[in-house]
Image (cartoon, rainbow, N blue to C red; front, side, top):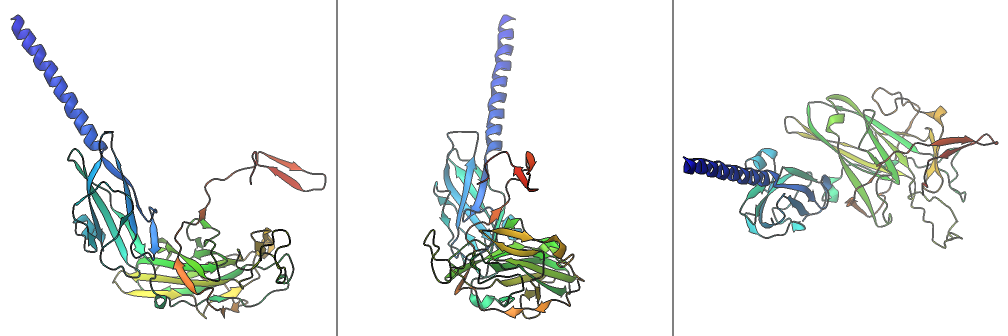
Length: 385
């Protein structure tokens, strides 16, 4: 009887250990995953013109001794093909390697406007295999002939501008155009460059959360365009595309009349007046496509609320000159001017390789002090610069 008790205890103990081992094994398997999938260091890469982009991912596991021994990467033209493990653009097959960064694309030649869906499977040192979640990147305009849009702007000044002053002043340009979309839209992608800075609106909604876009470059050599998915913003029927153009560093922030900055001795370059290049590619549900482009049909005004702006002196905003509804359909732009066709802003136009500036934190003043002169000082609670 005593031996039977011991046998039962041993059986229960052994079963308990087996359950713990099984649970631990399940926990390890469940915790195995691939994260931080990137193409060219970006988790969302739209409109890339890199012909051999580089992939990366991270292996995440509760097991500290685990390592990657092989990977299998698929790139597909549709999400459906990717879900069926059909890498019709690129299939690396199982590749024995512990590399998980800078995996260079070596598939079929990429084409303008191409959509690329990808995922990767990793084999680990204990023999487990795990697929990543699907990811995505898109190709931009790879050839100059892909651009049907024209550079447009306003070739002139208004009574408040001071282009010849040492402290230059130039009003922002407001540009708009309404266009119809005849059928239901599958997707819409905007490719835009605005010198020096732009804000794009579709049907009254600001596109993206970027600020001070695009990134600064050597404007006489190269300028960059950005790509946005604007599918949720367009609709069947009448639409409106609208852009504010600021000066940035393209229109000179100081004018020393050919002389360098007396303080820094750095030349202050004036590249020209602000200008816009915009091309929206629309894909309809039936597979047909249409391009909406900046051209002579657009209208422009410099009589908006932003009466002066540059990176040195900031922005002057006159709320009495707000153009209510200017970026929506149905706005009366009869008093606006036809745009001027402008020369290309630079010899080379390329997809921007880095991300734009975005607002990461909003600070509120901890105290507002009114001075004896009637001005106000905002105490933000910390140094700002």
